[in-house]
Length: 325
Length: 280
Image (tube, rainbow over the protein chains, first blue to last red):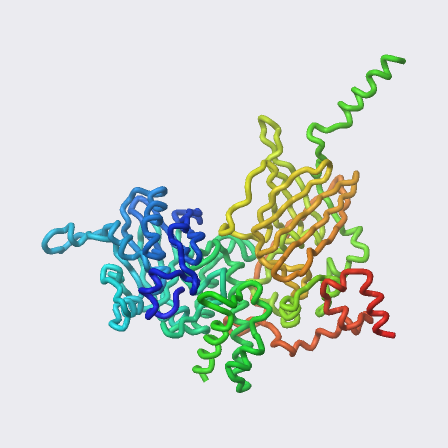
């Protein structure tokens, strides 16, 4: 959720909550079973150093992670994984480029090994070194861009990218559907759907802790976020009403199901519509901010300090809608 | 005679004092015959723009002002269940106990509500509430304790719900305290909602029930359908300042418009005097 890849490497040392000095030593990683083979690893504490949620799928084939948190937390992440499985870490899937979700790529990749075989030249063991890192191609482009200073080590980059709408895996006895959501939180977002466990890992398209983070510098738009939320809702089949059935692990915040995504989609759509109306009327950004189009939702998602304030959200919505005109 | 006088306190103790000073709430409880003045609000639903007597914040007032009842025609909203702090407004419920078969210790008290067929567990075995990051549900996570004959229940992990079905939301940050108070064949359920996001003071309501000896709770199937053809992703709502229905409630009932807007002040009897004074 850290904004703009220009901030990426420095953000590996600084926390998600801008202005605070994270204390990674104080962050505790806890495990919450979601359902089926899937678990949610949650970081708590550490003055903004808690990072994004990690989704874990385990089974006889090995371990698969969705996102890897901040680099300094890799040891705690690995320790938490080993409380559940001693099998090798085979795959890492990155939902997007930000370092609170990819910071641990290098460390955790090194702790794993790729399933390799076939026509490998030289030593087969070389091909197996490290877990495979899967992401949309735009994640690789942004991580490997020369403009990123200091550069992100190549060992942290995705090793397997896709450019179309999706990528499919079958691992630990279930289909895993990695669905690209264009121009949402960033331009490289993926939603990961564990089909047998019936769990969706959303990345930062959906959170419960703040307004949608629209990273304009990384290609994000508010309409892309709303499309992504609608996509997630389309994938969910509840038991009854809006509850149970498919569970949802957000980029940040608590374990959810359909009702939570619907509430968040409702908020995002209503705020978008209000700002769109103001843009249509020719209002300036300052006038829009003064009108406070989010004020009924501020008690739930608003912030006046930190890395993503209400003003920043309104500004991002305004800019993406005005650019559309 | 002396023997009887001596035995009487012993017999009284054995017969009248339950093992754990608890009241058995089990059975079917209904309220349709005793809704009284609550009938319009609890069955048909509140009117748009009626926030009177509730400690709403400005933020919640705007949220309700811009709420459009067409929202619940969306398929994904049609079978949305009443949350545990609201569902007692509706029809009946069955209450039953779950006991450990060996020790007969009370593990949980369960409720099944007619409205949307929801079921809820009130854990009586001292288990802790889950961590903050656990799933929130419409029923929430409830634990109970006995305060003499009163069952007091604390509920956390609630999904966003509502206090009135006219857009007055209750946030997922709320905690709820309930008191189940049985008086023979009547029961009063007091619900205290504390929601720091949208209400400046706790919202307190009581509902009465009658015990039904031969009571039954019917099924409540719900299957969403496409009621209105809309563009994908469209959410019905009013832009701020454009809802044409907000004044209708106050006009129809002769309620001063400012009283209909609610706020903590409107909860208290002194507010009537203030309004009368302002109208003179």
